[in-house]
Amino acid sequence: MPPDPAAARLSALAGAPVHDLRTAGAQHGYRYVRATLADGRPLFAKLTDAPTKPAAPTKPADPTKAADPTKPADPTSHGSPTGTPSPTGTPSPFEAEGRGLRWLAEAGAVPVPEVLGWDDQALVLSWLPPGPATAEAAAAFGRDLARLHAAGADAFGAPWAGFIASLPLDNTPWPAADGWPRWYAERRVLPYLRRAADGGILGPGDVALVEQVLDRITALAGPDEPPSRIHGDCWSGNVLWSEGRGWLIDPAAHGGHRETDLAMLDLFGAPHLGHILRGYQDAGSPAGPLADGWRARTPLHQLHPLLVHVCLFGPGYREQALAAARAALAA
Image (tube, rainbow, N blue to C red; front, side):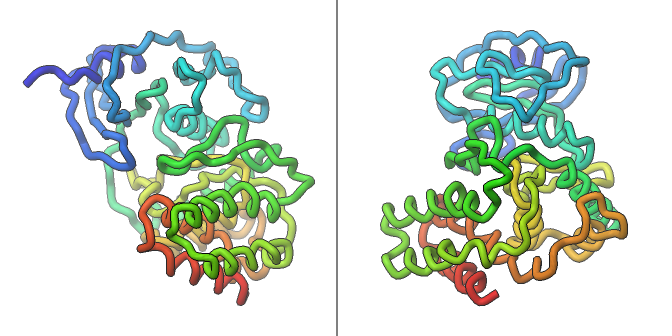
């Protein structure tokens, strides 16, 4: 079998020769691979299906100079860990994920895989051996998640172009003083509502129902909260249980509402969810107590990811998205 042409790219990004590269799956147009570096370290990588060419080696930044995630991204440098900017200037999902993981890691709260490098065609991460999801690990993950949210953000959104799965996500910073409700309506719900309607998946009556939610968003959203540092796509498949802890992977990280991450964990049934929530709300939680009525607001926070699923996967998620809209209005 001829060598995988991606090996040279991954070697350049990881800064060491790559051996034993094997395909480990595929999703959303990306190929997943597992490989081993020459020094024995295992890695995980995402690749586009587009033909690859060797990536330009990158020089590690000074590890003593942490990047300030509140400042606009420098398009020529990614700080530490390093990355290669897209030659076209087009936003890259790999850059969004690499920057998001780095930003989450800076909180020193929930563990995330080490980002070894990225460019416009690949993202290279440390490999995490999967383990069981235990009640003890779930409670600890809840406490870690509260610490992550408490790290906060200066604005809603993020200083890099966002993606959720393969879809663009508008991260243009929105001042905290202008509030979460209108940001959520305009930057998270409306773009995917329009996309689903334009694609013929949602009809005029469906659109009108969701628009009722948006018309009442300020009343439905609960008490004002400052931006939290959130994962942004925190469904159960993006929590990897390894070494007795819950690790966050594949983020759509940004400054958002902390109830969004909790609603995402509930959406597709995270294991030991009760233990996660109890850990999150332990006495003295750094994120503070959740506001009254947070459980009733879960469907409101699930509306955006369900509309994303409608856009990605079609009418199979239509009724679930509409049910979330009805539940949000009934809260």
